[in-house]
Image 1 (spheres, each protein chain N blue to C red):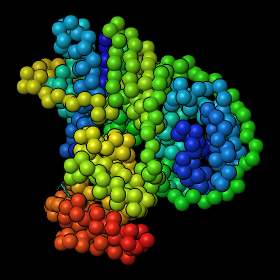
Image 2 (cartoon, chains in turn purple, red):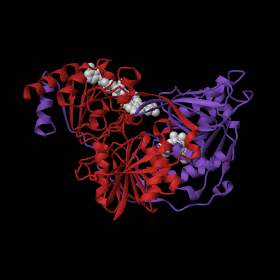
Image 3 (spheres, helix red, strand yellow):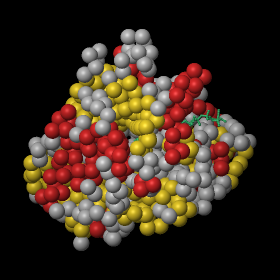
Image 4 (cartoon, each protein chain N blue to C red):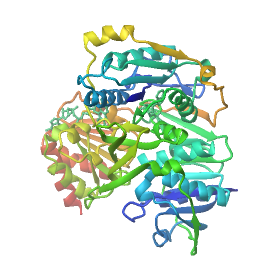
Length: 264
Length: 311
Ligand SMILES: Cc1cc2nc3c(=O)[nH]c(=O)nc-3n(C[C@H](O)[C@H](O)[C@H](O)COP(=O)(O)OP(=O)(O)OC[C@H]3O[C@@H](n4cnc5c(N)ncnc54)[C@H](O)[C@@H]3O)c2cc1C
Ligand SMILES: Nc1ncnc2c1ncn2[C@@H]1O[C@H](COP(=O)(O)O)[C@@H](O)[C@H]1O
């Protein structure tokens, strides 16, 4: 099996975010591997481990995991994290023409990178914590014409490694879905517990290869945006309001307050 | 004037309130075409401003899901020459919108909370800390609208249903739904539609009875933090936050919830926030309009009693 995992580098969740010229100011904040993508890396490792003669991923398993990211130069740090968890290699698409790319362009670039790799499965997180769109995996499936198995709460690949079954968990319930390879899968965060990179893993990751590609290497050129931001206004942070200690009538005082403010 | 398609998604044959919200937004821009896939639900749309009703056959959405919806919508957009598509923001709705965008090479804006007659959408991003206005520059503009963001304006609905047949694309048939286990619905309002949400966290220690009693006294929906859903105390479908649901009710009451950034991401745009927590230093107090420092097992029952006393 050849598995690709799409991972994104995002600003740390706790970092204060602001908009500059219509897109997120990424320069001023700490960047990390999107934590929802760690679950995708973990699930890829689990799939390989279940199918590897040695029970382990990596060389000797006969299978491989390739991380794919699109992002600025420093996104390679996020790739190192995934490589130290156990992925085998990585592709980094970096091009100044991609600054401020939206989901349409992102999915286009990722799909082209996937096409060049002969993969059986593509795994993604369900959402990047900065863009919060939850559309890129479905868009990749549409572009590739592959089966879409997104929002997976469980993933089972058959022993022959030709088909995959998932449980899709969304607001309508849990759907058992099945498809032949190749397929695009996104995994929800309930699916597993991502491993911490071991010391050995961190050392090994330093030697793994990251292939850096520009747009032209994928046969692509920059496209105009499909949408634009007219203006972005920071709203004053929510100020803390009243805080009262309960000394017996905290409940009724609360109700009086709500009634006074006419919310009940 | 625009020709606006709105997707009516049903859950178990029931049209959610968000359909009326889509019609309300759509009417501001022009002619409204409601797209029904997998059954005629027009009898539930009679109070909404809808100029034409189209029922699409030929694709099986219960078996093929998202891509089958895309095939249906693409057929309607082509037949009706639509220049706007509105879908409700949800896991499925956003995927449908995203794939239609790819197929038609059109721009898409997700999680909009408002849209005006000029097709300029408002989004509230970074957990409500920034308001953004954006527009799509392609001939077809696609938006997913967050539910509960607009007061429904009722209007007249078309009476005849037009039928249209769509053909599934080859990719659509590649992933198949074998079985659906629907969510068990309680008697309470739906989380994303409710005007009031009362949520419980780790502080409930697994006992949601006080949270539920207070919610019921207010006719509210019940939510939960991830700590509570992870522990199996409450179903995952009730989780509020980044990897759960995004809610923006007029009142959100957080009980025994510390206020982690991932939880805030799902509730920060609520109009009023109340927190009940034993720990005066809990971060949830930073965004609460009204905070009670105390034990939820003492505060909630007395609040519930006070509500009953007012009735
Ligand atoms: C990838 C990822 C995604 C996540 N997504 C989500 C998400 O969607 N939603 C979400 O909620 N979290 C999410 N989290 C988890 C989040 O980081 C927090 O761990 C979680 O929100 C904590 O839940 P809590 O506030 O109930 O528990 P805690 O943080 O343990 O807080 C419990 C609070 O209860 C108070 N308390 C205890 N007893 C009482 C009592 N008797 N009366 C009153 N107060 C009491 C305590 O003082 C404390 O403040 C996510 C985390 C990750 C890594
Ligand atoms: N720039 C990117 N590089 C690699 N993967 C991405 C990128 N953007 C999004 N993804 C993948 O798509 C998922 C959903 O992202 P989004 O649609 O942006 O919320 C993420 O969890 C990633 O797996």
